[in-house]
View 1 (cartoon, rainbow over the protein chains, first blue to last red):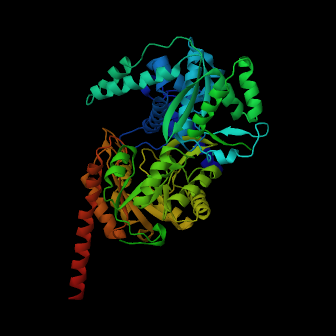
View 2: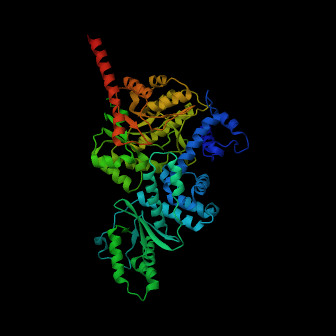
View 3: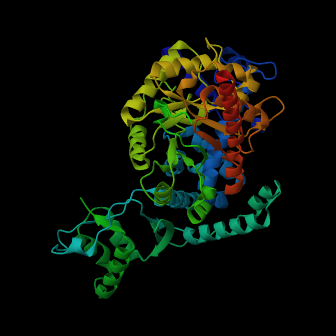
Length: 293
Length: 290
């Protein structure tokens, strides 16, 4: 068992090391020895391929698979950073935080943390890139995250605002962003769809598409967005600052009364009761609330 | 078709893998298909569109779960969260049996998301069989292990791949998902006779057969699942059903996926070989009883 474990550790370390020049396996091992020598110690060669070349097949497969996965899940980050910087970011991220889940769905789960820890990878657009990483992860969550039974009007009967706690559905993420990235991502996806329908059968079309995909970067503007799903389709819903504060308070487990106090502080002299009723009605219709603990 | 305890006594016929590009066609046209194989991990989520589609499919079709990341051969303990989700999904799908690969792919909690070849040692067979048993016991339904295609071999190996497969399934008392395309790919990459493999696995344990296409490169073959099945693989398929009986058969097509009809038509080519084998058997029986 111990021997098998050591062999699996060695193999995994070798195939998860970043590729070198020309997408080849690095020529030196971690201790400076030639990789050809290290590979030959545990992998058999055959009459066509050396041990190094056989290991390289797996080394490439690993990187192509995980890089592709993030490429598909983060079109917004690609559009902000461009092909080359996004490629480097993905390698740095996956080297530091390789997958710890049986599902590739979770591959980007630590990207926000990584960007916070290592801002040079997103320089000079650190704030925008961080917002985008949050925004795109929120879409992963909204796509297939858990849904609790939505709260109905009957559930509210007989409850007072001072002791009733609402909770947001687990698949909803509330975002306070410094850029209008919802509009930006919609533009990116539209452009991508348009390019795909034009370039249908040429391999080189992929590079043209990628080169032309980058729309103009957004200017700073604070926006509040709820990323959610309705009837299993993904949506981004803009929120006003008060709506955001209210929903965030519910998400954090406060009572309705406390949430309203927190959210409405700055607008105390404005009667927003009619608006509040409308908001609640919409949110209830969207099934956003479930019962808090 | 031979139903046995390793495939939940099923006689499913010829199926195809359920893939996203075909969702719309299947849900709107409702084509006649014997059965679908679903990738378990794609539906081991908490909600949303994947489960909605799955439920619609389950209303109309027989499905069997096929996993890609249980990694029976990993020295890590079986991931309990994975197991729980797998069992929850199995309760939803009522899958008659489960399958996953004879491989490893994670170590110290880190996942490679690849189907990595095992060193064919007795120690590795023991660990692998224990994990298969654990999954089988926890989920409570039969498990079939699938042979993978591979591009590398370890010096440590003490036996052939088919001996290793036999060792594992006997120790675990589980079934085999025999992937004839994978046998073909590995036979070319490692220079063995694929018929030695087919002839020397315990045929009575085969619960399902996979066929697929592959890609040839200058020095090796890759298991890409992006082509029709090649003739040598169909020939091996015919031999396999002569040995095992015409068991549950599934075509895998995972990249450059063509229309649903094209994929289904490719899968149904298996019928030719099944009929051929049945004719041969009838002929042999007639001669024997004449």
